[in-house]
Structure formats: C-alpha cells, structure tokens
Amino acid sequence: MPRPRLPHRRTAILDAAEQLVLEQGFDATSVASVAARAGIGKGAVYLEFESKTDILDALLQRAGARMQARVDAGLTDDVTLSDAYRSAVRALLDDRLMTAAFLDDRGILGSHVSAVTDGRYRARHLLVIEWLRRLQGQGRLRTDIDAEHLALALSSATIGLLSANALLGPLDPEQLEGAFTALARMVSAFEI
Figure (cartoon, helix red, strand yellow):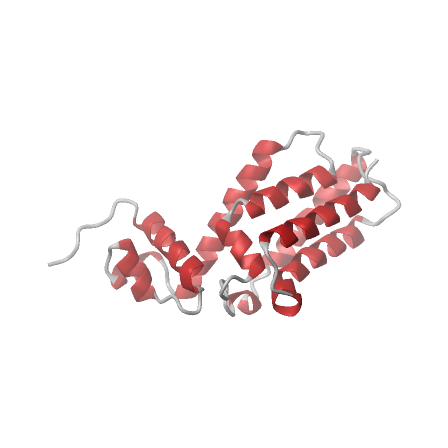
C-alpha cells in the first residue's frame, strides 16, 4: 500500500537531511536514510530532488537564506562594512549547519564544496563588489582601495576559514567567531 503524500514533503526531506548531515556528515548520509528520517519512501525523495547532491545544495541555499534574513533584519540603511560583517558572523554562528560547515564537524560537507562548479561563489563575490562600490558611492567606504581588491580579500578570507579547521585545527566556534571579529576590525580601517 502506498504511503500517503506528506503535505510539506520537500521541507520534511530537508529537515531530515539537515539532521542527518549534522549527525554524521554529508558523505555518510544516504537518500534512503533521509527518506526513513522524513517518514517517506525513497522514491518520494527523488520526486523532489534528482540526487543526494541536490539535497545538499538545497540545504545550503536554505541555510544561506536563513542567514541572509537574520542579517537583513538587523541592518539599517546606514550600515557600515564592519557592522555588516559582524552581523553576518552572528547569523553564521547562530546557524548550526553553517557553523558546522565552517568547522568541518565530522566532515559535514564532505567532498561537496570542491565539486561545485556552477559559478555560485563567483556570483556571490560579484554581489560583494557591487555592494562595496555602493558604500563607496555613499561616502561610507574609502575610495583609495579598489572595491574588487577588497572584495577579493574578504571573499578569500572567508573561503580560507572554510578550510582552516582541516589545515590549522581543530577549531571551535569561539575561535571562528574571534577570526571573523578580527576581520571585521580590519575592514573598519576602510570605513569613513
């Protein structure tokens, strides 16, 4: 007998997948275990997602949207670069999946990040450049530094923190917060 359709199947799948990824990491999570945790059949998962990788992509997009909503809620139109950075750090540290991804808790993202080649990181980087130029145009950020160079430095530092645990770790949330706080203090030197 077929199982009844779950009203919010996609959300249930993502909730189950997030729990499993946090418990055992992406590489150890299977579509079958996600289905079992969500209380649905494996085939129902494939009705929503083509692959396990698509599930992780959706998880990261959902976590990014959660973070962005938290950041946006705490910022005003006259936000400084360092305030925005601090707000983003707070949102990251308040999100278990994103914090775990940075700290590589039990290999949370596994091999997924290095396999992403769709340009999403480049697109986000271009948005940072655009935002920095807007701050410069509003007279809130020094113009004697190129926005592209500053964006590259910020993006590289953030990306570097994704691998810091593996190369320099183990790190804990307090160390991650301290590193981001130091970066926020550094960028305040470029504010007017």
